[in-house]
Image 1 (tube, rainbow, N blue to C red):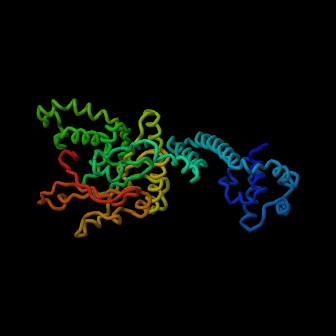
Image 2: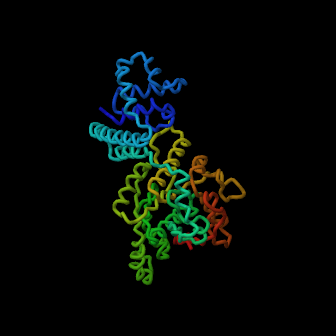
Image 3: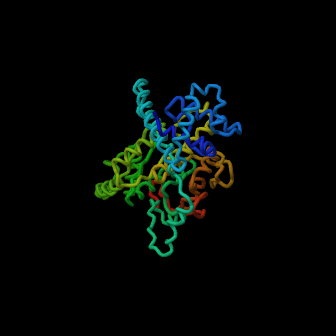
Length: 410
């Protein structure tokens, strides 16, 4: 006999308002009778009827559900003051049952491991302990003016003016880095990853387009100041002085601890599983997740080929991942070709493909623009990093120098 569920149902009878407040659904109860009883209570509530012993006796199949004596016993188990504790217990028991069910189904259906992890992740996302009253929050802040404040450490972008504007890459936040092809997105991302690594973070790069060997080659080129064309054949094309520095460049780059996953068409669930594995492998390092790029992420559902719905799902899941792992997520995005048709080619929010959900979910949106890309004759060496959205700070433009031959950003 499940006394937690009896106490839960008893509370719903004793305090009718709880039926509208509870996070528990009928299917999360274990007892078949309990599932039916809760569904009937919901039906009564939705019809504007009171949930009490008198009303419940009007159920046509009352005897099949234990009769009046069983309803009375439910009421006897009620403890409204402990209702949240009872909910938590029921939710935990449901999670354990669901996990066992999934593992059984996976075994019989020969599921791929990524599907198993995705289904288990869905269960773990169901939470109750996300509540803080303002009273609690104010108590924690009461002594703040007289205390030495702990400096909140955030992952640096390696660009001082950008860090000043955004505060660095914040835990739980999603940054979208968007630009047209060949504008320098991947180089900027790899610059961010290197700097975060050297600052003691664990950069995790999910490259859905560029293979690991090319990423590694680019990292070496930008760090050592090597022309990328020479990286195709370092033995014959590098000068002796460049070869002499090679070992130092490799050693310095190795200190970043960058982790690269270059599988095409990865889903958010797969990225979460790999991130969790890296967090177990490096327990004392906080991850910073980099994804190249947004529309190459495979959505869990096809939505009949509706790309807007796919991007909406992915955008929402990026934010969930950032919050769950309490780490920054930086995701690259392509811009529409409409940029090329305008006289003013600096990007705007509407230029992001399927921009609505991305604009809404992202905490920071950065655009890249190089005048030299459009005007080969200009002597303007700058790459503009345009902070178009900044949930916790100002917007504006930062100028950095970008060497398109080495990928170096300064």
